Length: 375
Image (cartoon, rainbow, N blue to C red; front, side, top):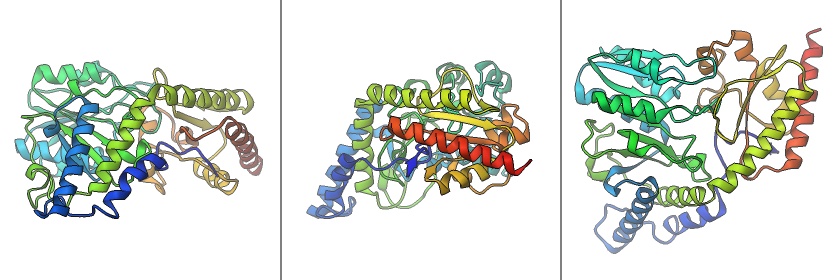
């Protein structure tokens, strides 16, 4: 299989798996237990938290281990709303469904929400955010980089706007952790998810600035300083910390390699397949290429590619199977047909040049097959 869906998930790195195994086999105690096995697990959790905090450049007490980006998005939106009781939210229209659906839930609970549209390049501009802010705005969410297009957002400026006005700013960094420096100093909370940087699925972390006005999402015991009830997955936390450390250490090398593969692929597609157009402009992550193909249906193209051993996506993996076009692409102004014809190709550190060439040739054949069937 040629795997070009690394934005959806990445394979677990061997070194990361080795870092996790001791807490699945020998040191499997509950980190909340008082016996020696529990203390060993608690020590491992402490080390994972310290390592994650050091990389994020924050205090260990500001790091909370979660099940991933979706939980973090829910926590941010609903936790801030619970803390305020009423108010107005500003949410970008290109956020992950975890944030968008949470904001809609809060609308039902009486909060007002403004969904900010991107420009034609897929950028949420600071000016658009500023226009949306009201005197009663209590929360703002603009992601670091979009999961479908890879377009990087001006989060430092947006964070500054929010800080000046005392607005809680949440930044979804699921796609950028281990790739770009994270905007910890510019936000009140941010999220990362291990399976996006070669760590285990179901493992995430949330930075919450000390003193931020937010309530917990999951009630229960005293885990995570009483802010997230439930037995902590020590192996997953150790895996996240190990994966983040390795990703950051190799970010420049991996980024240059991945970008080179992506750029070769895009050049081949644009020059070799008529009616192919890249979606999103400006600064992008090195991995992403979102391309629309005239006369094609993205879902059909995905299935044909899959039959030929090439794994891609038509958008967010969390909304797979949806019959509606991408909310990100339509928010950018693409027509319904152009949005439905889009396929997301995302490259990773294990991809090779020979895979790029083979994937291009298979893609060209599949596009022609679909178009010929419509004649």
